Length: 139
Image 1 (spheres, rainbow, N blue to C red):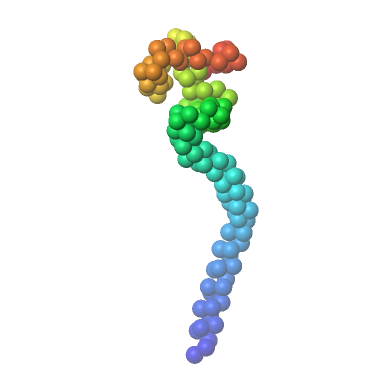
Image 2 (spheres, one colour):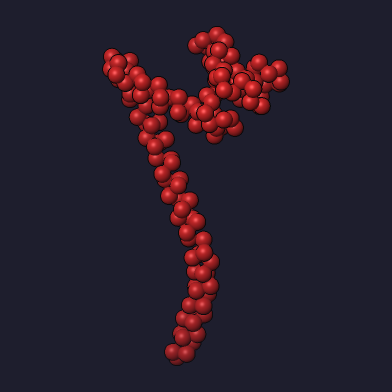
C-alpha cells in the first residue's frame, strides 16, 4: 500500500522541483522590481498624503512651510507631467500645455482640459508658465 503513496510523492516532488526552478530564475528580478517600486512609490504616496496638511497649515499662518509646499507641489506636478502626459520629468504640466498651445498643432484633449482648468484661476496661465529650457523641445 505504500507503493502508490511513494509514486504520488515522487510525482509531486518532480513537478514541484521543475516549477521551483522556474520560480528561482524569476525571483531576483521580481524582488528587485518590488524593492524599486517600494523605494520610489512610498515618498510620492507620503507627499500626496502630507501635502494637504501642510497647505492647510500654511493657509492658517505657518509661513515657514511655504518653500516646502512649493517644492513638493512642483515635484508632484513634474512627476504627473512625466507619468500621465508623457512629458519631460523636469517640466510642469502647465509648461507642457503652454508649448502645445503656442505650437499651432492640434491640441490633445487632455491638454485642452488642463488649459480650461488653469484658466479658471489665471487667464493664459499655461502660456505664461512655459519654462525657458523647454521652449524648443519637440512635442
